Length: 221
Image (cartoon, rainbow, N blue to C red; front, side):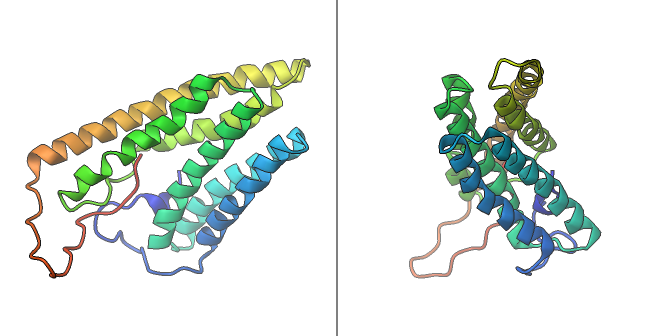
């Protein structure tokens, strides 16, 4: 997905401390649209408008990465905002569609469970001085598949021919997306295991000393 969240260790070439950039603004807009989407689905059940919001979120996800590369506006804030926005998008979509009973409980539980699994690995990374490992391509592909899946599944909530076609394609993207999402999580866990076996732990700090800076930053796949 967006290139500006592919932090590969020390600061990537062109990455800056800037906050006011176009890609960061698009990520912020994406975050702001999520409560609107949830309200549209669960309040007035305005599915057409909710699908429009999801399409806008998906387009902004593409544009922030494209513009970050094109305008050389990669930033450390963008490296944080982009994956956070992706995960909150997935969480908001599965909760809203789950409450409407458009998707089954196993999907509602299965996607957030993968992120909880990865969060449980963070303390192990910190023992080696890492905050996170680089984003994996498979994880970005999984997020892209899910971004396509949710609007289609929402459109598929009906009995018309259009709804049937949308439901078929939506489930195709959803099955591939959740499979790749968990596969990326397993690969990430394997990376953590290799790191723990090949990298010595950080020495314990004397009490009152300054904290040793983390060796790497990035985002889970």
